[in-house]
Length: 254
Image (tube, rainbow, N blue to C red; front, top):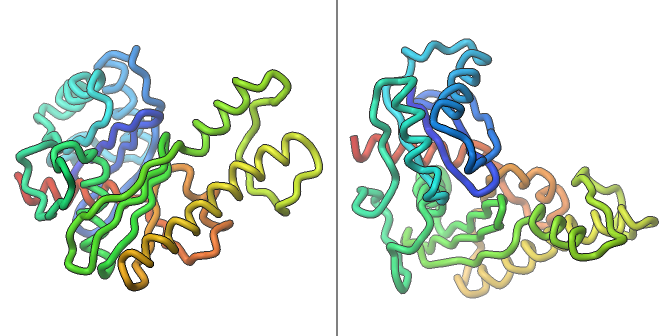
């Protein structure tokens, strides 16, 4: 089993995966104040919860968009496994042709998503990753990564709205039953959830228009289940997409 870790701005996804199955997928809060020992304890506890011994970890691979924490988590992994984890970065063999102005600036999480999607879905592909930011990446019919868009994630938008408007409360993101809200909380929640769903639907239409054909649609990220049921397009949800991509990159570069 490979220990696969994706470090995002809000959460760190920790998973165990091999060629046959995904053993677990868990999330811990990204906290710049934590030490390597604290993250090591997090990983060890997750393994214990799933009744998996540390000896079952054959190797580890890490993707990070949080530079201040990267070395901390790498150290944490080595502390509990005794193995130096592989870090996704420039110079790594990905098998992905990136057609961007500066390919080196493409986020490692977007590359990992794309590598996994190319293996499991027919091109062209639109990949929607919903985290702190929502990203929509495009792979053309030839399998090239051609670009995408980035917009504020659900929680960022909602927290910004609440913090900048004194009379608006902080609210949850449970699924609404109707579009038209009957109170302030429902109006805010519906605006964020249906607004994001409509934005995703509209952007998919425009991206497919540019591509000249319908695309495979796949989504991942912790907030995706809150929005996808409200979208009018049929979008596949793959919770382990990032982990699958990390496993592919590990196998290509070990």
